[in-house]
Length: 168
View: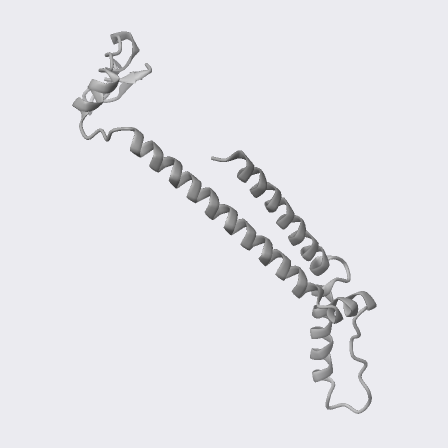
């Protein structure tokens, strides 16, 4: 794969992460948009509950910072920036996939297709057998469980494996 494309992808991912962190901070910080909307909904529920009673009900007002964010449509702009960055990431991913496909195709054209073990062995040689000492072995457990007057003694059915680097 191309190192330049991977570096560009990482930079773009870091940029997108920074953008999403900024949006998350705007939404979730103390006195942010989520809290302001929660307070508005809570206030409206209280207003509905006391609507049959006489008098005036003071509605929740957003802080100046939250109102400014609503007026400037800051959330919408941030979401659009994140979406544009995602489109850039998708384009980079597609470019990486295309280059990888071209690389694989060039390798495919260069190497003959091997369709059997005989062809493989002709090209790369036969594998050597492992020496006997490298195999894992399974030995019967020699333990005999003692009997009683009612039950006779019996050998264990367990097998113990002595680990090697291969299996027999």
